[in-house]
Image 1 (cartoon, helix red, strand yellow):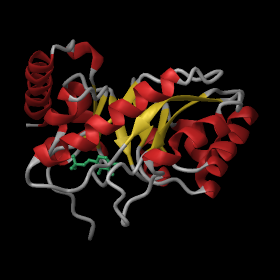
Image 2 (tube, rainbow, N blue to C red; image 1 turned 90 degrees about the horizontal axis):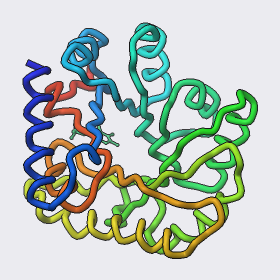
Image 3 (cartoon, rainbow, N blue to C red; image 1 turned 90 degrees about the vertical axis):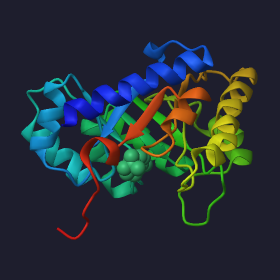
Length: 231
Ligand SMILES: *Cc1c(COP(=O)(O)O)cnc(C)c1O
């Protein structure tokens, strides 16, 4: 069942890449396993899925502990509080949700301690929704410049959580805006900064995101079913 869903998403990635003239190998599927049991992660793993996204540090670390012999890359996609940075840095291959200079500084500080260079993305609230985390597109350059000198983090790109919608086309302008931001930031030739990752698109809109240049898509519900937060 999960293996079938993964195959379907991979096929959709292929089709949307073909439509956009992209190479499907540029797109990484992140299986968002938050709230879902380890047994489901193992099922996905058996189907060849190795990159998993979690939105809570504690849950990511617990699952990592159980599955630490497996070839899994953990991505932290949810809001990160500074008191949880140490644990996050110990496990996460990529932190998608960096939304302030102070958080980037704390990640850098904890990464120094374990001699790691932590890959990060800046979370951009492209649609400027009040309910969402992330910095605005307009403040992105200033933030990038402020963190460019931090030696133990490596800014790889940008992430956005687009508005919930029934019609993915309504999110196309936001994805396009994030892709443009990447071009604009690279054009600034800021020391130590070259970005090439765009984390955008979820179960409802990843096809459009791929057409607009997503290199990471974060898919949960479509692979693992609806989440029940009451259990
Ligand atoms: C939960 C979550 C997802 C996955 O959303 P689905 O609609 O279930 O595919 C993607 N990104 C982030 C940041 C999330 O928190």
